[in-house]
Image (cartoon, rainbow, N blue to C red; front, top):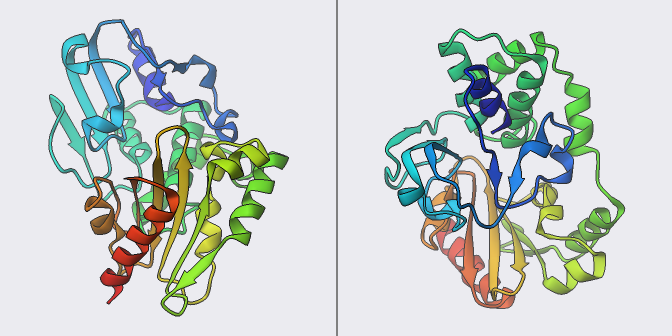
Length: 289
């Protein structure tokens, strides 16, 4: 979003940056994050709305009615699409990230990237590939990032903020999550869960669960690993999946109205966290069989 906004401003466009959720603490080092409006209701009208990373219109939230408040909608995404809901839909599930796709907009327009723009795109690729270790990493990802490094991006700086900076309360939450890891099917399935009580105890939020799921995937025999997070006041549970390359967890999350990638996906389950764990673990077990 920050990189694309910078591009638009070069063409003297008036840009309104919107997010329903606050900028995560580990991304606040990026330039111009203060320009992002964190609001639950937008009353403005726009000529164009560019929606990033929303394979379904419902993922955009309810802050505004994009049908009546926007003349033209553009959707840019790298997830597998279920339907083309915008006026212009550009999706490429062979890309590791939307950041890669935004990079090609710069190249198409023959624009040289500033260090700040390159840093935003680089960070997007790093976080979506988990530091180039997940199955969505491609040779294209590495080629693009090599070009971004030429713009002055400092990998050590990005790595420090994204993967080696956590507040004390977030580390305590990680400790709780690690202590609650359980396994099924001889270790082929592993999961942990975090309740509202856990968040209250550590004075954290769902945002502080970033990267916890990757620790669960360190178990030697694991094929599918999952994190369950209880959402405040909704009697709903957010479920995150990861899997080995040949196991399609996106197919599982689709059954529950979710989506994502073959090896990294998610969904939301109505009910208690205990009910969600049983439903999802049973479904994953059937898939592994």
